[in-house]
Length: 270
Image 1 (tube, rainbow, N blue to C red):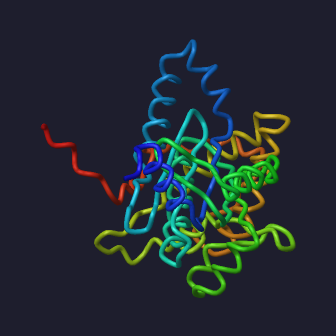
Image 2 (cartoon, one colour):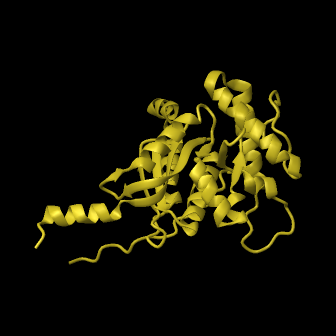
Image 3 (cartoon, rainbow, N blue to C red):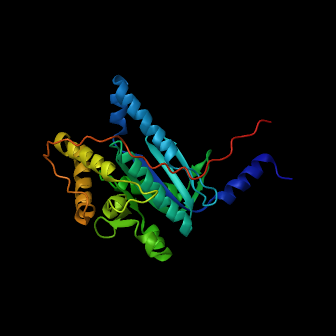
């Protein structure tokens, strides 16, 4: 009969397997914490952002989808299968979409390989490489995708590959503006997300960054401006983001897509 530590080690070994792993970083988080120190309104915004990070993605045992978050970072992983990769793309897309409504940009890396991911342990070559890929993205607010993930997406289906966009030769990232690029205001049908206000809200945030910020903060905004103008504005409904515009857009407030797909049943009292 195995001892408890032996049984635990056997379980750990069995759970170490091929997974998709994403390391995501909320850009500008430290500055928001400093603002929140002295400003109650900024503190409320910070709580809203952290609540959004907590509530956007939910674990899904059928796909091996798991997540850990700490301070301004998050690790998301799933089984290395076609449905697992689809959910990884959806999760990164939705998290980025939601946080943009609070003027928070996301930088990350998505890789594939060996990993163990549970609430108590997180390790593996894919975890290390996801962090490395996040670091490679430099100042740009994007989630870079490794070559093996790109190949998997190509092999799974054309719809998988549509989640990816090139930012230079063989530099693929998750296309988190695709909804805005494809958006048409009509027809309106049941369940349709109306993107007029959230799109203009994002444009206003970036315009203000371009007009008022300097250094690396403005560089992030300039990269986003170029991304928006070459993918979204060229396709119709939304215009170009231009620096120097003084007229302000007044939004009705953030539009949030919640995506908790699986909520475990609360523990029953013994």
